Structures are given as C-alpha cells and as structure tokens.
Length: 133
Image (cartoon, rainbow, N blue to C red):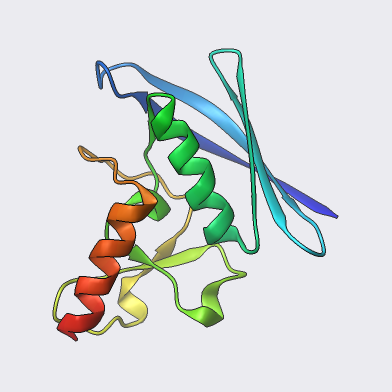
C-alpha cells in the first residue's frame, strides 16, 4: 500500500464564506483506492476502483454533508480519459473542443469555484461535451 497526503480547501455550502483547510489521505491498495479526511470532527472515507472514481464518491459524500471541494477534479468540466485513470491529472474541457495537453491540469490543484457539481451533474456535462466534439 502507498499513501499520499493532499491539502485541500473546502467550503461550507450554507454560507460559502467559511473555508477550511483539510488534509486528504489517499491510500493506494491493489484492488482499490481509498480517500480519508476529517472535517469539523466528522470522518469521511470512501473507496473506488481508481482515483477519479474514489474522488467522485468522496466529493458526493462531502456535498451531502454540506461541503464543497475547491480543486480541479471537482469542476463540472473535469474529465479523465481511460489512460489517465491512475494519474492525478484531469482534462478541463470546453464544449465543441477536443482536449489537448494545454487542457491537462493537476487533479488536486486549488481553483476558485462558485458552483459545486455532483458526480451526476459532472457526468451529464461529460455526455453533452462528448456529443459536441
């Protein structure tokens, strides 16, 4: 098992001004990846087959608890190709445009956000984008 820590910014969605710094522990096992964090004394732990899948479940759990994550992977237009599934990068895509290397961004990198989409909303965007290219 390998582990990595990432420092992230989360925001309480009820007021959107209450930002907190958290550390996310990412554990890489042979069969799955697990993400763990503590926010306001609540433990969050989710698993997935790859980093993006684990992140999506983790992000949705935080959203259900009233927290949004400010990182590139949480953006509505963040997608991964099959070859990226084990990497900590995402494409930030635009409608009608195929992604290029200029569109590759760090998975965990901070970004300013006003909207905090769920996995379902992110997948709906991805389907529309796929149809547009």
